[in-house]
Figure 1 (cartoon, helix red, strand yellow):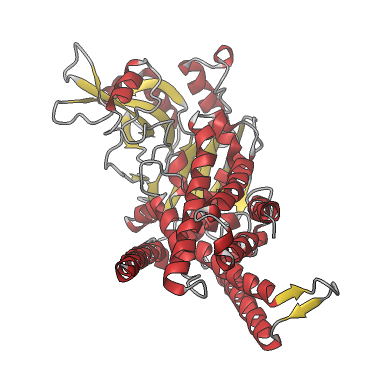
Figure 2 (tube, one colour):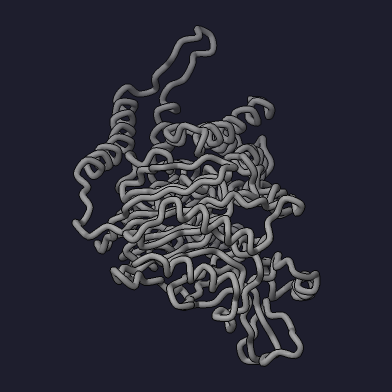
Length: 546
C-alpha cells in the first residue's frame, strides 16, 4: 500500500463527514464516515516498521481539515479566528487518533482497545464545551439536528449519546469491511469468516436500528402537558451588520421593531421577541429608566393587556474596584471608576420596568479573547481600541430567568452561541424555565450554512429539554420549534418578517435535564484512567529493558 493510497483513503473520511453534516448533508452517512480512517490506522499498526511513529496524526489531520474547512469556512466572515478554527479542530481530531493509536499498540498489542477511541473523542468534545477556545459546534451528535425523528432519545443522553452512537456504528461497519477482502488475482470477494461476518452484520443492525425504532416510538407517543399556551410574536428586523451607510439610527431601529411587532400583536400576546444586539446604543444599566428608546418600548407594550418584550442589546455596567473583572475599562467622572460591556437581553415591561440578563457563553475571538490571564497586554490593547467590544465583553453568574407577569411562566433566553450548549440550557430548565427564547444575530455569516446549522441545532435543545422554543434572528432563520424538534414558520434569509405562534409551557424534567452530560463525564474519567495506565505501562517496559 503506497502512501498516496493511504492519503486518498484517509481523505474519504473528511469527505464523508462533510457530506453528512447539517444542513446540506445526509446524517446517516455518519454511521460509516470514520471507516476509511480506521482502516488507515489499522494498516499502519499492522505495518508499523514501515511508517514513522506519528504518521497517523498526519493522515488524520488532512481528513479532519477537509471536514472542517467544508463545513465551517463561513466563520471567517465574522472573525479572523475563523481562519484558525479549521486548523485547530483538525489538530484536535488528529491528536485523538494518534493517542488512540499509541494506547492500542502499547496496552492492547493492536488487537483490541477500540472503546478508548470514542471515549477519548467524547472527552475532547466535552472539554470543547468548557475551555477557553470553546467550540462545541462540531460535536458529532449535532449531526442529526435536521433529522429529529431519529434522535428523540436525546432527552435521555443529550448530543453526547449521539456521538457514542456514531462511533459504535462505525466500529461495526469497520468490522464488516475487514471481514470482506478482494482476491488480488481473481478479483472476487473473499470472506474470512461467514459466522463472524454474520455476527457483525447483526450487531450493526441492532446498533443502528434499535435507537431509531426507540426514537420513532417516542416520536409517535409524545404528548404535551395540557397547560395554557402563551402567544409569542417573533420579530426579524433584518438589520445591516456590515455597511455603515445602510445601518439605521437607534430611533429608526425602535420604530422598525414596533412597526413589525404591531402587525401580529394583540391583547392575547404574552411576549414579543427581538434579536440579539438590536439596540446598539450601549445602554447604561444603572440608567435604564432614563433611556429614551427603552421608555418608548415600555410605552409600546403598555398598549396591550399582557405584552412584555425581550430584546438584545449591548449594555454597560459601572463597577467598583472590588467588582472589576478582566474585561473592565476605566472611566472618569463617574460614580465608580470602572465599567464593563455585556452582550445582554433586556426584559421590557410596562411602566418602565426593566430586567437585564448577560450572555455568559462568549464566542472566542469575537466576544472574548482566549487565555486573557496569559496575554493581558493584548487584552489591554483591545480594550483601548475604542467602542467595539471585540474580545473584551464581560460575563457574570447572573443566569436570570425572565417571568411573565400574567402567567408566571419562567423563560430562559440564551443569546446566540449559548444555544449550542445543551447542558447550559438544561440547567436553566432545571431551574424552572417552561419556555426557551433564543435571540441571535446570524447575519455576520452571510448566506452560508452557518446560520442554517445554528438554527438546526436548536431542535436538539427542544428534544433534550422537551420545551417549546421561539427563535428570533436578526436575519437567517427565525422560527418556532416544538418539543419533538419540529420547526415551523421558518423565515427567509435577508428578509424583514414577523411571525406568531401559541407555545405551551412545559414543566416535566427529562433525564438529560436532571443529569446533564453524564456520558461525557464518564468518558472523561475513563480516558484519564486509561491514559495513566498507558503511561505507567510504557515506563515499566522501558525499565524492564534496562
